[in-house]
Length: 144
Picture 1 (cartoon, rainbow, N blue to C red):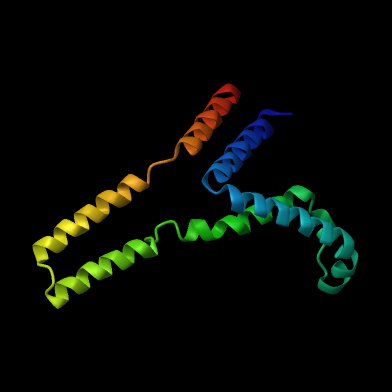
Picture 2: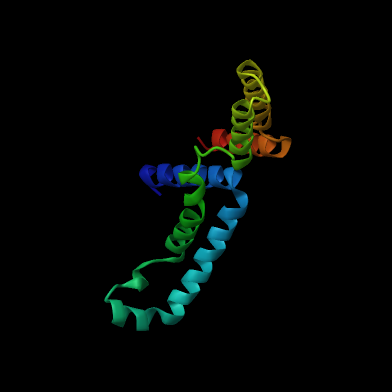
């Protein structure tokens, strides 16, 4: 292999490793979906090529797996900046209590700060994900 292929392979390995760490279930389901889609394309490909006039046979199984992994992970990418509905609900409840006069504006600020602190504490990686990330960085450093 030449160096550009080696670099491409290293990049793909890192990207798939990150996807597996970030969202293992959807990544695995996407890979399985890609394999099933490849099987369906093999069975129905010749008939489908006549109907839609596309050369489906030009795609190999890695294309299908990549497509499946991409489609199953795109939702998480699009929603990466969305606030958890439970947090939004808690913020709305605090605001409602202020409007009803049950708590003061100062108390609402304190509750919001406590909520933000709790959310930030929950954002930390659990021990298993942290160890997987360490393994991935060791593998990357060994190859790179």
